[in-house]
Structures are given as structure tokens and as C-alpha cells.
Amino acid sequence: MPSYFADYAEICFEHFGDRVKNWITINEPWVVAMLGYGQGVFAPGRISNVEPYLAAHHLILSHATAVDRYRMKYQTTQKGRIGITNNCDWREPLTKSPADSQAAQRALEFFLGWFADPIYFGDYPSSMRQRVKERYQSFLTYKRS
Image (cartoon, rainbow, N blue to C red):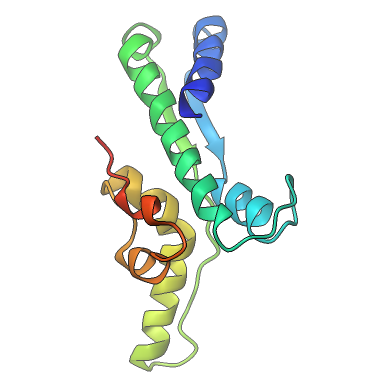
């Protein structure tokens, strides 16, 4: 639940905010979602076509809730910055064909855009919304307020 994460983060803000000026809420959420809930490589070792999207959705909501809490209650006095650390392996088209260019772009959207677009643009990439809608409908309806 995102509020639990924000409660934990707030404890950190209260106890360390006089010394910490750069906060990272979540490190490499793609790794947590895909490798933990999609491929089962990392904890909790789940293998699913649906759970990575649910986990990612909650990671983004947790990040947003903690950021909001920091900005509303602590940033003015502590003068810190807060963000998320995304990871991405770059993709290049195999050939100059439009299909390969589109595939490379789609791969970037499923890697980096998955976590960056909701934060910067308020929604998931359109390629994701089109391709995974059957797997997780509420993933499509998330809008940043």
C-alpha cells in the first residue's frame, strides 16, 4: 500500500532530513517489477504476465505518495530534492526499416517509459496501454493527480 511506504519515508525525512539533501524513493523499479514479479529472478521469485504491471503500478503510486509527503511537509524547511532512480538498457533498430525503428522505440517505452511517463506526462506510454490492456485494466486508468 503506497501510504505505508510514505509512512516509512516520513520517518526517514524526520530523522535524517537535516543531513540528507538528495532523496531517492525507489531504486530501479523496473528490476523489482520485471525480475521480481515477471521472471522470478529476484525476490519474491514470482513468474507472471500480470503481476509485474500490478507491482509497477504500486511502486509508482508509492513513489508519488512519498514525494508528495516530502514536498508538502519537509522540503520547504529541509531544502532537499527527491526523485526516483530509473534504469534502462538502450535499444537500437536492427535495420533502418520502420518496423525495426518502431520495435526499438516500443522496447524503450516498456523499459524506461513504463516508469518515467506516469511521472513526467501523467500516463503510461500508449504502446503499453494498447499491448497489455487485457492483462491489467486498472494499470491503464492510472492518472497522476
